[in-house]
Amino acid sequence: MSQNPRVRFAPSPTGPLHIGGVRTALYNYLFAKKNNGKFILRIEDTDQQRYVERAEEYIIDALNWCGIPFDEGPGKEGGFGPYRQSERKENYFAFAKQLIDSGNAYYAFDTEEALEKQRQEHEAKGKTFIYNWHNRNKLDNSLTLDPAEVQKRLNAGEEHVIRFKSPADETLYLEDIIRGDMEVQTSVLDDKVLFKGDGMPTYHLANIVDDHLMEITHVIRGEEWLPSLALHKLLYRAFDWEAPQFAHLPLILKPVGKGKLSKRDGEKMGFPVFPLEWKDPKSGTISSGYREDGYLPEAVVNMLAFLGWNPGTEKEIYALEELIADFELKNVHKSGAKFDPDKTKWFQQQHLQLADESVLVAGLMEILNDKKIGSSQDYVRHVVQLLKERAVFISDLWESGWYFFERPTSYNEKSAKKAWKEGTGELMSKLSEVINKTEPFNAENLTHAVKGWIQESGLGFGKVMQPFRLSLVGAMEGPDVFEIAAAIGKEKTLERIRFAIESL
Ligand code: GLU
Image (cartoon, rainbow, N blue to C red):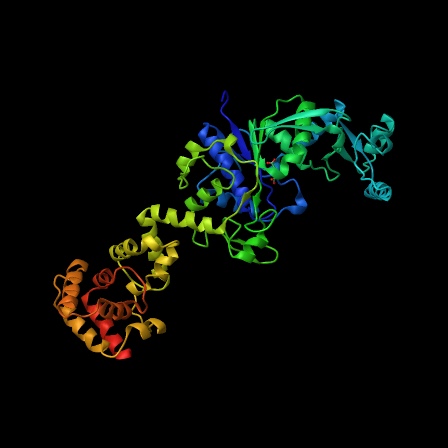
């Protein structure tokens, strides 16, 4: 790449960032980091009506949690700021005016009612009304009005917009890094509003102006913006600016059925569609987030990277650094990527196994603290080592291993029925004697002693081991029973057996 790329993630703060948005940010980040470039966050908040409080903060928190921070953006000046469009609003009119002066845009005074009337009349004839070359010469705008009349109306403060004057009949050749070459006939384009009656630019104008001023080299964004590509290319041409390269990312699709992944799919099937929990400031409703549901950011990032891209090898488990090394924009798929909640869990499980042990220890310590259970770091670490392999979430360490910290006070009924028979009590008393004699008390010695005793006495293995486990755990679960006994210690092991004999 001749020039160090500058890419931007340009969300509108209209609510929490959907995981599709996080994926767009991630691909921008990976591309920037791979090519020694800069990743910029620009907040596109020109639509005052759709502005949602705290959404910007949420976006920034989400990027930071994922470990993909921006190089330039709100609060991180990089010489191209400000990075909120609302703080740049004075800029935009001059650019709109420039297009008027060069004959690429025009003032339009048509009222909402007049346009509605046009729509209805067209519909009655079975046609669709498009404000473009086809009928702009019959409408109320500076192309049809006398210049003096236009000036008079502007001076009088008459409400108006500024529209782009799309070419009537031209074939546009568009390029997209992911999709390849495309052709668009300008005759089907409408004359989009660039500047609104409220004195604010529309998305199209502000987006192009800022991409230019911020020296963006590659626009990497969701497929939903592909229909705007022709207009954007025409705007660059009208300004006589060099256009960036474009890459439109595939849609993220529902796990089942057709269409885009939505918040409702998550609610229905029980998975988050947001990186972090979000409390709607108006309704107060809470939407779940991956962070609060116990996912590791590494797992979420890995999963998102694979929604629309893969390295073309068998390798699936990726750390962020490895993604940066292997990611190629041109290998991103054209077709939509089906979201798979089970696969997401699988990524989580894999990354939990790879996570630094201290993360798991700290996580389990926190759970114990919340429950007011005191325990030492070393003990918790030992428990983590015994349980980690089967855990998907840190919370599983508690859910599947609480008995390392508390005595069971009840027993799984089915297991008790199966494991505890006539004579089991006496057998457990004898086992207690064997345990009591085992010194030093560790898993290895205990295994040896108990297995030896079982063999010598000609007892069935399960006859002893099942009630032994039931006594310690309360159910037929958990890692090696000798490991459990060794971890909780001789005294507690004997106490639990005694308690089981009394209760069962
Ligand atoms: N503000 C647009 C959005 O919310 C940005 C689209 C683009 O990247 O051009 O997605």
